[in-house]
Amino acid sequence: MKEVYKDYLFEKHILISEGMSEEKHVFETLFAMAHFFGVKITKGRELVHHGMVKELSKKFGENVPEPFYRGFPQSVRNLSAEELLFDQLLHYFNTYELGNFDETMHSVFEKDFKRAAFRENTDAQEFMIQTEEDAEDTIRAIVKDLLSSSRPLNERQYTLVLTFIRDHLDNIPNIASKNTCVRLLIDTKNISLADSLNLSDVMKIVDELNYRYYHNDNPKKLNIKNQDRKFLTALLDRMFQGDRCDICTCYEKKKLWNGFLHHIHY
Image (tube, rainbow, N blue to C red):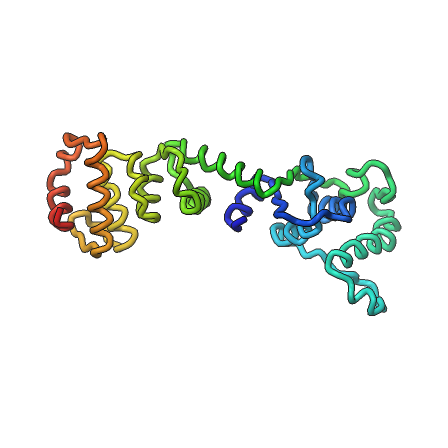
């Protein structure tokens, strides 16, 4: 799964299990996630994998330390990162936390996982784990909701929607926001998206294209490259084939239309 999807779902407190083999150290991994990051898995515990500890470490910007005691043998040096993590956890508890009487501590063998695993006064963050297939369905639902809103999208939301549409050009939900539709049309050059617009909205597309790609904020001064002229010509052809030709509204900007049509030789 692409990072843009994983990052967006992470902010929704969803972790992705991407076709990983069965985890042999489920308890230890859940314990590490709770102790170091205050993460409580409320759904999908059976999908947990030790690689998620590294992922959480990157996301939260906290480095999970390696064993810090002196004189550890070469056999310890040869352990994998995950084995080092579990070894460090046990050593840390035995050496420090169980012997520190400045704070209330509990035995790691207590039945109450939350009290044993989470540090004192930790506000647990509830996460769930999904398979890659379920995560794709979640992304699809999120994108559908974003596109059904008439409000413009922020940059994070727009990046998610743009990536999704580029990946799924054959099944694009209806786009309610003209602002979003115009941006997507320019960035994807997929003229089928224009079915959500009227003919009068073409000037919005021209203005956006002129400003973003040609750094020109004067709608009366066009110097569009040939490939973009072809794109706009195909866009007009698509409009005239449908029933969204609001000519009366277009007439309100007659001078701009005349200049635009002359420039693309339409």
